[in-house]
Amino acid sequence: MGMKPLSLRKIEEVTGGTYIGAPEEKDLLITGVVRDNHDVKKGSLFVCFQGEHVDGHDFAPEAFSSGAYACLTEKNLSENGGAYILVDSTFEALKKLAEYYRSLFSIPIIGITGSVGKTTTKEMIASVLSQKYKTLKTKGNLNNEIGVPLTLLSLEEEHEAAVIEMGISDFGEMKRLSKMVRPNICVMTVIGHSHLENLGNLEGVLRAKSEIFEYMPPDSTVMVNGDDELLYAMEIKMPKICYGFSKRNDIYSENIKNLGTNGVAFDLVRKEKKLSASVHSFGKHLVSAALSAAAVASFLSIDDEKLLQGFLDYAPVGGRANVFSTDYITIIDDAYNANPDSMKAGIQSLCELKGRRVAILGDMKELGEKEIELHKNLGILAGQSGLDVLICCGALAEHIYQGGRTDGRMQVWYFSEKAELFSVLPAMIQKNDTILVKASHSMAFEEIVNELKTLV
Image (tube, rainbow, N blue to C red; front, side):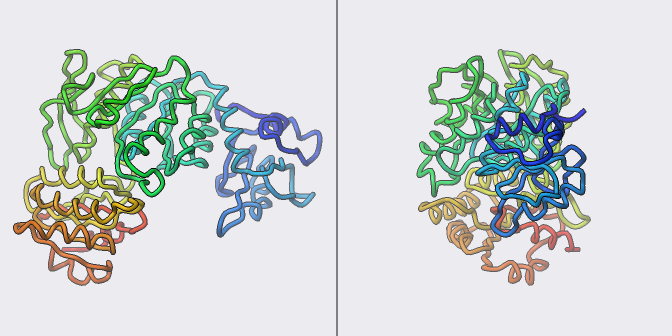
């Protein structure tokens, strides 16, 4: 099938741009919108972005030769290349186009926001919805003001539901995302310590995330993690369903059993009805994601059998709590991202496992003026959780080390550079250890995961 076709005439009108090209091509129908010339197919609209290092306008000739019908540009292209629509800002034009294209669909659209667990929650909800609907989901974490419109523009005629991850780092962003997405279900995971440089404090984070409500349709519903005090107390005009571990929630879990690297089993309780459920991936936080999916499923009348199958079909996205064993050790690769809330969840889930537990932790970025305190507290928490070995690597991670040293039982090590760590890693790791690797994405801790794989 493909996307609902849009004529170049319509795209010119929606973006407020100027069509430049052969008049007879103005009614050509666009069947895909892309920003990477490698993704161009016949019928594509190629969006030219002026980046810091690369100018997309330079790739227009390649896009045309790959079958693009037209380009969306901020610069005049040569006459002989092909048709293009000239706009003041391709960034703004893309958002206008996505907003219009979203209006052509009357399907359930679920917007996922929160400080931690967005991608896991998105994947879990999409896994459940896919049991009943042809479902579009955000690829990877394309959750910003370029990723979201491109995701919306990848909706195809046959899609019956969409799960859109919406990430922000400043005030005003969520408002702009919501204007495009107009979700009829909003899921809020946790209000945590992320992007505090711009948002100030937790109340600021909540205020920024809550901008999503401004463009939600009148008959919308909000699902929130009711274990989060700010979300539980939040008063809104729309119906609010709370999910979480606590019995005060509308949907909650009981009898959580950590099955080690085989996943987690739990009882799901909603309206006094109890279901036995399990997820084949590591970490208690997956139960929280499953509860959010149960909330969405009940709103969309997805039956219990499909719900439970959706849990079983869930698979983590690259670098997010991927568990695998070598003949020597078990590695929990959670190197994709980190903030205090996700770090805490990762350490606590690790400490529920048997055997010798090792955490290799690095810097958490964008925490603002409390960054030293938040890193130090993490080290203290690691000791209180019963961790056996804490290995810290990175400039800010020295504060995790300082916090960890207050626990006399836990072994604590600090390395300023990965190379320094690699030279002694074989001596620090023992056979049958379970090792959590976690830091902010920019720390490139996947290099540590790769190093661990070589140990024998």
